[in-house]
Amino acid sequence: FVLTSFNDIKGAERYGKVVLDIMEYTKVYYQHCRVYALIYGFVFPRCMHLHSCLEPIAKAYCDCAKIGDSEWLVANAALFATLTFQCGKELSSVEIFLNKAEEKVKKWKTTTVFHATRPLKQAILNLMGKANHPTLLEGEAISFTKE
Image 1 (cartoon, helix red, strand yellow):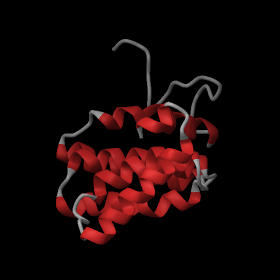
Image 2: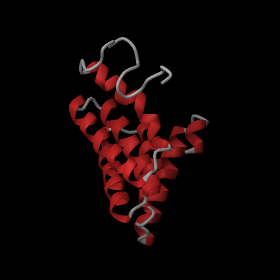
Image 3: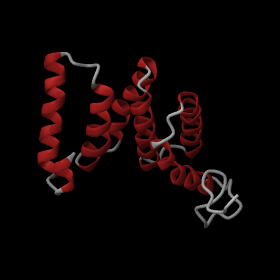
Image 4: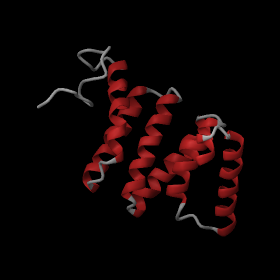
């Protein structure tokens, strides 16, 4: 992840693959919820097709839900929603996913990272024509007015 910050994409890709190989060799799969988020969410999207990152992030999201890792569930949900949007998936399916993920987030009271998905959700609502002012990034999901 650090190497991508320094534009060493090839080095980051190599280290990401090494980490996955080590996980495979040592059978340390319980950490994949965290590792997949970093590798498939931040490193591989810069050097591989985005579509190839969707399945591992979705698996990590589902496994986080199974084991009750709420922090990384939220991180994987945000990454999955962002990647599906960037891959051009149907907007309504991304909205449905975000709504279901938000229910889990509220249930587990781990909303910290999930707030970062609000602009994405509002952009999706705008593109779907579900906003009063589709040219503004403000509406149901994100609001800048004081209550």
